[in-house]
Length: 93
Image 1 (cartoon, rainbow, N blue to C red):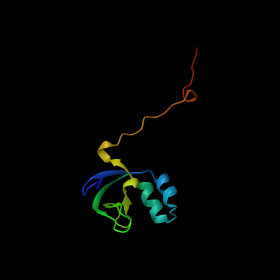
Image 2 (cartoon, rainbow, N blue to C red):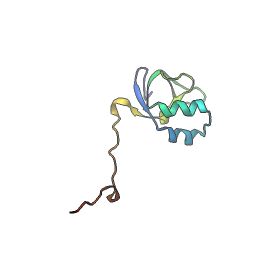
Image 3 (spheres, one colour):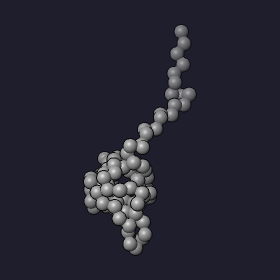
Image 4 (spheres, rainbow, N blue to C red):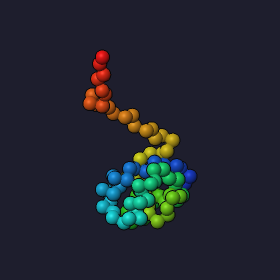
């Protein structure tokens, strides 16, 4: 298992998850829009698919798999903002 019970993880961003799963449930969309981090409550191997599956503390209704999780929360670093030359104003006297 890549993650274990008790691990706090960073889920992928919600746009990626919706695009990947083509999920239109308003409950699912509402959940993933407000959930950035979650704690693993169960971890097991899905018998028929042969992949690691996880439930989280926020909602037990959906299973997450390794590719839905970005990293352990402690390893997550907020990306540096990217500025272009158009973001910087040239102020001259």
